[in-house]
Image 1 (cartoon, protein in one colour):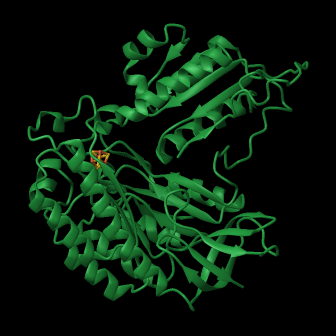
Image 2: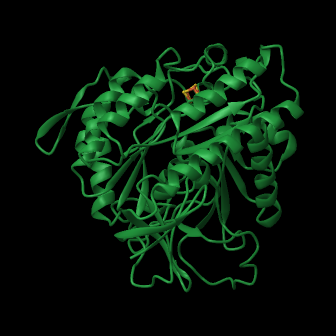
Image 3: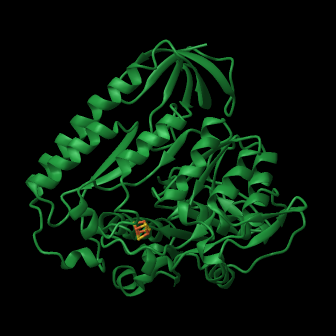
Amino acid sequence: MKTKSPPGEHKTEKTVHRSAPRVGFVSLGCPKALVDSERILTRLRAEGYDISPSYDGADVVVVNTCGFLNSAKQESLEAIGEALTENGRVIVTGCLGVEEDRIRREHPDVLAVTGPHQYEDVVAAVHEVVPPQHNPFVDLVPPEGLRLTPRHYAYLKISEGCNNRCSFCIIPSLRGDLSSRPAADVLREAERLVDAGVKELLVISQDTSAYGVDLKYAESTWQDRQVRARFIDLCRELGDLDAWVRLHYVYPYPHVDEVIPLMAEGRILPYIDIPFQHASPSVLKAMRRPAHQEKTLDRIADWRRTCPELALRSTFIVGFPGETDADFELLLDWLTEARLSRVGCFKYEPVDGAAANDISDVVPDEIKDERWHRFMARQQDISRELLLKKVGQSIDVIVDEVDTEGALCRSTWDAPEIDGSVFLNGEKDVVEGDIVKARVVHADEYDLWAER
Ligand code: SF4
């Protein structure tokens, strides 16, 4: 996901006298980084800063970077360069911020560099460049904070950091160990979002199923009762709010079974995003994946017995060092049997500082490519088959956009940005955020078409 102030397109904006200093913002990376951006913006807005939609109108530009893959780092460095060219006063934050030397080598003119979650430091750096001006008319911030997503859905971050040590990942060294928010804090934020019109809450973290482990599942007070910081308790409480609740980044630990009945009862969406990454035990071991010894196919079958509507989304990596032909064939067989609804696949890319770089047996690029194409082709067949079964069914959809051609929607099986769409061609009698029933009339391997 990428949100960005449009570069240069407001270059003709006139300089007008204004009382509030203005901050431009470029937000790169994953939904977790997006939530960080929202927090920084909310804080700045609360202090009276205006948010500038263009480089030209900004007194300073904050670039929230991504440092996960080398390609993302490169994109972040380019975004910093663009902000420097267009505006000249640039503060860098986010995951790439831990590589301050590299940033300064390439862009010596940046004013400050801070790392991920260093909200205070980013705000302090902004203060230094453009001091805040307190003005009661611009200090007003909506109680739900400022968000970069459309009004009707919002990411709800329940923890930071991660206790796992997957060998291809440097997030724990960037973001630290798991640090969960107390349940009452999360629920208060969720309630504020729903009160402000949010219809869908997307629960995110690095490892949602590990929520509360670091807090030893401590209780906190929410609506005159005690709620434990435990995955199932949090899901139950979120399920009582008047919104769709979608779970991302869950690992197949045994306690995840407890949440499936809530999905069957319709309290939270019948959707789990589990980044399986592979199916071969030896590759999973080399990846040091959490829950890699679980019998996931059996578990998936059990879940489906409890909740037949369950949609499983996942991501996979092909071409991990040491992945043999046999490992890859095992992955394809597993995929065929698992019949996942939504799947993303990446070709393995080394990340500076990751333990996997020490594994010999690098898979050549042409083999990675070939495996990727075979993987995608297999999944497309599965996905097309699953979606064709929906034709004729009446389903709930949430409206994301309406234009002259109709409404762009999503079903309960589709998360924004990463999954498919449901097209209501010619539909004009709905607005963003409506949840309506529609009958599916057509399907391809990714999307559905429906009518009301
Ligand atoms: S679970 Fe693994 S891949 Fe995900 S953030 Fe933690 S260490 Fe990285």
